[in-house]
Length: 487
Image 1 (cartoon, rainbow, N blue to C red):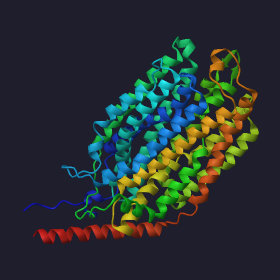
Image 2 (image 1 turned 30 degrees about the vertical axis):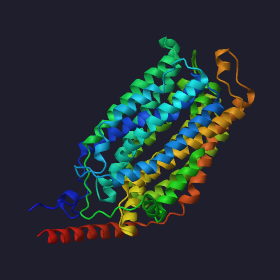
Image 3 (image 1 turned 135 degrees about the horizontal axis):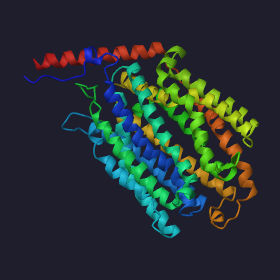
Image 4 (image 1 turned 45 degrees about the vertical axis):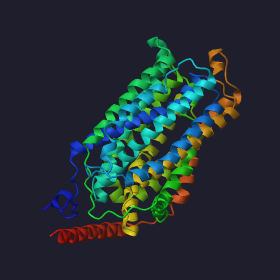
């Protein structure tokens, strides 16, 4: 007689700490690689278009915003497809983690090559490549993040996984922080900015996706003997509408789009130089050192996020503290200024302190999303890793679309024109005056907007424990019933 296989929540394998460290390391490295690729596009494609391809900022904002809106819309469709698709292996997400990264990596590299096209042809080419990139990336992204909910049934264990994933993401952004340093040293290296972006596309874009293949080493540990009957896509969406935790968290992330709407490179490249004795550091180099210095404390803090959460009464409280500190510290830094070495040191000290809890936000949000998936199953009986994570992706991509649209409109209003650089001319005075408040105060405004819906989330530790307990009992009951029928 064929033995029924089901995740048993009371087995030894299900105890907290069951995810092996080598698997966590592989998962973390995979997220590092994937986020290297994503961050390269998210942080540098806009700049590449304006300063290498010389496409006007308003046009860049419009076409990148539109393709990212498309990017966002297709995510729920991808997530719903993944939730419905049945694989012979019995796995839900694993099949999307092995081969797609190679295609994604090639498409990423193509977006950072100047083929000498006219402005119109360049826009059409980028739109076409981006759409193809996004479709394949969406499958990988939903599967990668969905694995976090399937890797363990325990919320604290998932928080540990989230902590490690955030470490991997932090490492990815540490790699990306080298980009302005390398750009700043291009003349000494004798490499043009155009060639540097080709190298970035291949090494960071394609190389990052190759690294993400390590996610294939993860295991799905949550299985169900009685999966819910298939229902329409719109009925699946109604499950999400009943999930207040998820909806409020996604709304908080969306209204925070104003945070970093204008890429940092425009402030540092055009408004910052630093004299140290007889050495003059250009803005790109200063941006690198600024990023490293403000991140030192927060990089260490990521290793203690779960313990901090336990002491503070949950991940929700960690997020609230982080956003409040970001508001207060950025307001203080703004009034200090960034013109002299002493002012720079003061700002770096203040921002580095605020970055300690701020860097835990990603860990906390991902942990809350896993809790929201459990909550939805407890309330509706349907498990929704695919569509839940796709809705998170939809929110993030709408947020990115709003960012690029805002960046294009703001830089256009400030009369920014990268062609002036090639002619040896300065940007308009209004452009320079606006950069410091844009750089320092927009993230503070984003934190304030984030807190308005987020404070409405009500999900206590007691309620979370009840949900986990009842889900375990429900799964165990299903197992016994099915084993009885099989006999």
